[in-house]
Length: 59
Image (cartoon, rainbow, N blue to C red):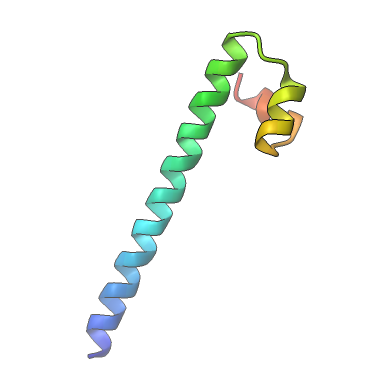
């Protein structure tokens, strides 16, 4: 019984982490796209909650 719980919890953790990573990658793609369109960094800071340094690192 413990093995089933371990497999389930490990699988669930991996699924959540994969979803989180995918969401972060999508956000980064959107930020890069908005930067290429000339959106000011200050606007992206307000919209995303990221620091200006984190946004600049995506350029």
